[in-house]
Amino acid sequence: MRAIAILVVAAAGIVASRHYFDDYFAPLGLFCVGWLIPLGVSELSLSAMQEPLDTLTWLLVTGSTLSYLAGLALVVAIYKRPLHKTVRTSFEEWLDPHRLRVAMVGLLALSVVAYAFEVRIAGGIPILASVEDRTTAYRNFPIPFVHYAVVSAIPASVLAVLHLRLFGRSGWKVPTAVGIVAFVLILSILARQELLLIVVASLMVVAYTSRRPITAMPLLVGTLALLLFFILIGRGRDGTSDFAAQLSGTYLPVWASGLVWPYLYLAVNFTVLQFLTHANLPSTLGAHTLQPILSLTLTRRYFPLPNVEEEFGWFNTFTYLWPLYSDFRLLGALLVPAVYAGFTGWYYLRFRNGPTPSRLLIFTLIAFTTLFLFQSNGFAFAPYYVFAFEFWLGVKYASTRPRAATPE
Image (cartoon, rainbow, N blue to C red):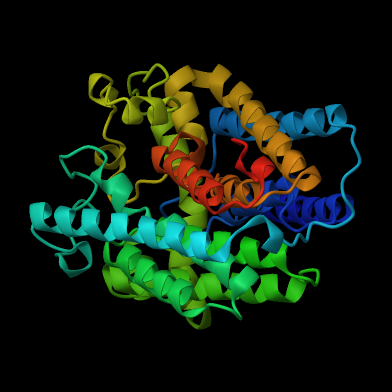
């Protein structure tokens, strides 16, 4: 019954968000999708890996939820300016198509050169490596900043989608080629979440540049496509859904066996969170939360982090709350979500009332981070800040308006 109650609240929150903001991508709706729905699914307890959440874990989950909602409500209350009636914006007059093509090709060229260098040093391509080495081939690359350049293919692909939306009739070949090459490159390094980032960001670009309002049907089709994507990822990663079901003790009817991987992806993170809170790991004193600063200043080596994968084995995601709890214990898990929500709400309202191409693209990163709160803390993931800078730089270069070049 608890699972049903949480899912009903999540559905009501999505409806309320859509009604109030006239937008499916408003922060409240994103939070319901990225946090409350996975929590409700987790409470179905269909896997033997899962354990009932204890008092501490429920305190973290419930307290952080209320904190996040309070942060959003406070920003909306302070931001008293009325929202524009439409969220659909035409940016054709803001950008020069030739310069936009140069920006996306430049980012892709940077990515390809860095990719070739990384493959040469690492000795192989992750997708062709053994199962044991696939996910570590690029994580453990010893030379700083090279991998940030490799994944520059991601903003290149999203800029390509923006170009196709705005100037597709007058020049579609270059952005189409950029998008395909970028997607294949990211697929080859098995950056699964980054592939999802490309999909979500592209969908948002299409929605916000469409002359017609997006309806529920495309979102439903997109959700079903994501389920298929997760199923295919599971098959490519460890063979079959039967293997995953046997390993995790997940109980699903035969006709729904393909949903084992999506279910585990959504649900087990809360069990991992509970396990880690009782694992007696040392406090990381802010190293998780400040990871972007530490990584971009090459000081991360001075703040060693515990190997969570060694603690829990084959499942290594743990919701966005574990890094906060690891850094600041209960106080951080109860207060920092309000800060994240406040920033998300502020940037969204700023975008809605003063839409620019760079604000749209950067908001896609914030939205994607919100959609994956159930899995990880994207606010503390350095590459997203690199992507935001590359979006801003690309749009600034392609801008035909001085005000569009204002830093975000």
